[in-house]
Image (cartoon, rainbow, N blue to C red; front, side, top):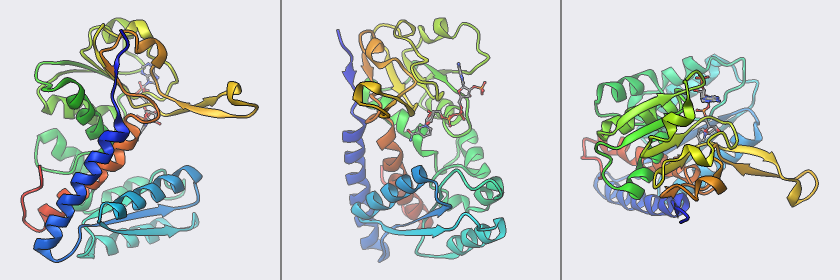
Length: 296
Ligand code: NDP
């Protein structure tokens, strides 16, 4: 039987709407909308699309959103000065600096400069430490989106066996910690893991965050498992015409859907959840900064 499709787009729309309601409720108390600043340095076309979507969805949800665009020639000191200004701006609750930065800019210095209480991307060392310690803080958006989709598909994650393939600081590692926080039992796999197919076959929830198209084969999936495919890979699609491309995940979707109980498509799975969780984080940051309970 084919797997249930986990609709990330629809879920993201619901979360956007909830974040918008919460933003409205907070605005009525504090007299201003929760504010998000998105900083784009350089002219990377993919980053340009991401930033436009982030600002568009934040604005649609009723957040105060600011877009700051700077040329690739910006220096590290100038980038730090922008972060300092946003850190000090009382109307801004969340700061997101779009990655990747131009090579000559010190990325760690720029990320590390963001006030952790405004770190809506959850990428500062302080946010990572808070996650590790289980303290209140802002969690990275894509991994948080993975956990939410898995919860919607499977329900309570307590005692579930989760295998996360990929150990990046952006996705794999924080995803493992977030699933652990939900009382799942987690294995973090990577390029040196032995017998990855056998390991994956044991997973109740299989998360692929690798960046290799179709790495996870259909027979790596336990019957009935929940498959969360984080990968976004652009591949040639000659069937669509000469020079055409299409997006695929890290999972061989057509094969895996025959075995899995539920599965995220690419596109339309984890992807749309990242911005939804960014809006949630901005609302949460505003609540915390204003001494309010964060909305559930
Ligand atoms: P990275 O390249 O930073 O990390 C990839 C990880 O996969 C590494 O830990 C690597 O292992 C592991 N890996 C590579 N090859 C294999 C293999 N053959 N078997 C097992 N593990 C392997 O990627 P990211 O985590 O940044 O991104 C992963 C994917 O998720 C990409 O396709 C990216 O586009 C997508 N993505 C999607 C987002 C979204 O939906 N919004 C957001 C962020 C990323 P090792 O550490 O040993 O080298």
